[in-house]
Image (tube, rainbow, N blue to C red; front, top):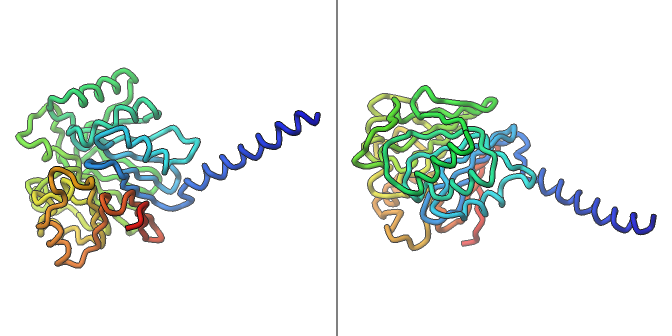
Length: 284
């Protein structure tokens, strides 16, 4: 009995700590948007108030697994929807290990034609696991409770189509809850921004993820005016070879007095609502 008690007490303590640790990462009625620190690439985890998670892109390496382990509940091994905005390596490479580590409920992608061995491995893993596949278009919206995921672009299916610039096949999403909105643009450039402006679709949002890692080829003045964000998040890696974010983009944002948050400077960034706030994992 004494031996059993000695084993049971530490075990119960450890279990209790794990339970507390698990529930400390449950949103408890908030919407969390985590811009993960994956280097020179995109990876965004949206956690809705009821706890479901949507992962948008996976960055260029397996570091996304480390980032997910830092923000997801300890006992949670399911991602309800995985979104690949477009098949460049800095967005898709980390998703192959994600598919192998987590149970994924469905995958949303465009299916645009693109030759990339990592993209091929991603599609092969989806087929192997028989994961439901959703093809992006304006009618491919989905929701969890009152949180609405609106596919703004592409307007129609581009399945099998070739693109001169695959960045411009990127899925553009608007995540909305109550009077709070976040626009996520993948690597969509000025051409897509102009198409969205022509349609007159509602782009207003408190938070905008800058297109193409803050490149001068995206986040144009007209698009910024339509979105009118309070905060722009730039996903880029420190000292990256592309010099992202470009000075033209930063100057444009500064001229409009828009708050800029960057993964290369702040590390992982969390935007939360309804208590609209942001936090990050580095001390500058």
